[in-house]
Image 1: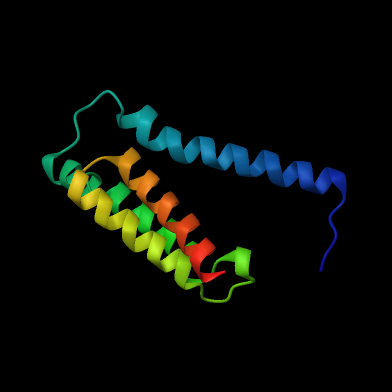
Image 2: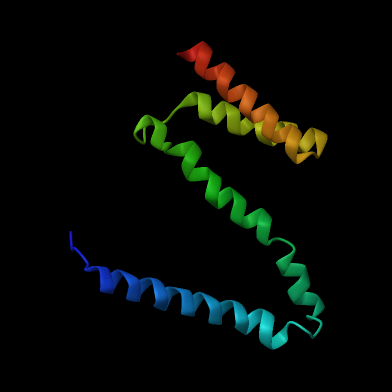
Amino acid sequence: MEHYSKPEIWLIIVVMGIGTFFLRYSFLGLIGNRPLPEWALRYLRYTPVAVLPGLVAPLVIWPSATGGAFDPARLLAACATVLVGVVTRNVLAAIAGGLGTLYLALWLLG
């Protein structure tokens, strides 16, 4: 593994910060005061629905708490979270249902 010096690390952080700023500015600063076309708004509506499963799925399938081994308790908790969310349409209820299921499954399955 390569070791970076402190100035190199700070340079990387600054360059990444500038890049992030200009990526956001290109969308918000340049066209932020104009209405977006209907087709763009329609696609942007699905962004959270596409991003959240991509963030959560690896934590369910390869959880770091088990060293990457499959864990049925976490799969049950994920399924319970989805089920409670679909039934109640309430984010906090879904989180509480998944949390309760995870702790109960970990307690029952050991």
